[in-house]
Image (cartoon, rainbow over all chains, first blue to last red):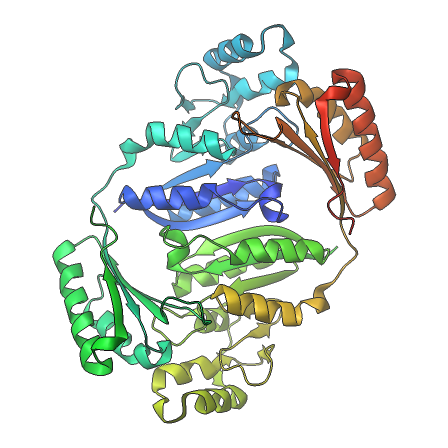
Length: 251
Length: 251
């Protein structure tokens, strides 16, 4: 099964100024593509931080998606960080130079041309006229940080990642999580290949007290575990405890 | 200057099911407390992943805040992961046992009592009657993952972290980021102690084309760099390019 890590680059994400949307978007898309997201990191616009995070993420997952740091300003250091992480020099990519010159015309300056300096051997991933570098080096895929651009370019490319789909079941329960724990413990032991999750909610406004999820790639197994869960919930807590059952991955 | 890292623990954050709110909340709060958030990690509910992420985060920051994985179910493994990261055994904390017994009464079971097994030497951080473990081991501070509980307990405790405040200036500009890059490059070189950020927006609905931020702890220096920025923006791009100037850290 293919696994991924997301590395979101940008001081603004860590200073509380900007709420992440790229990592959340990519997490959802990867999920729908059948790719398991193992890890996400948010790091500052600092070359050394990005290099170390790349090494960490690559150890943890088959592919790493980065967002941010590919623009023309002094705080855009993703290109040089990726080059350094792979021990490759930065080289000027003629197609990017052309795209930058076409976009900026007479206003071209040394800073905007820096966007054409990609790690040697990088494969460009973007549609032809796009002048911001979007590229792959080995198993690292770099996308822009501006959410609209990140989504557009990821969506245009993402189908190459597609794996067999995930299946899941959500049960919304009117049960205290602590009372449920022994049942879930047994069920997880009975279905070690599946992932059981338990998510309590608090407060008068909560639509349920616990959400239990069952997930995996083997549909019959998910269905079997789901049936066992519902059966055991009814026998332990009664019919009224089961507020709602949803199959979110079924179109 | 005190630095922090956030480690958000939970499969639901990586599967796209749940959008992070704890990391974003803590990032904003740390900022207002004058603490620089250097790094955030999102990891799965797996002991080994949490242990490695703890080591990574502790290398990067003075203190690490974790969220999630402190409940009673099989997927709550933060307590054992923190114990393992520090090479300490888990020991039963009598005050937590009492709180758990008081809350659950006759419904107490072995799984809920697991919440009382904290790493040896852990300092409890929560108000007395709260039965979910909130604790510190050395420079690692563990909070619950349920957002309402995380906020409540962090807010009740956070003042011990307070440092001198950050100051900042935001300029919303009707300028292309690439045209602005040389000016920002020069200004950053002139004020190396400050952090200059540049955040483009795209699309017809965008309220500006670039947001430029100037930030630091030295208020007079931030003011001086801000004045220089505004002055240079006006002389390069004209008065109309400067749409709005905000001082977001000034109450």
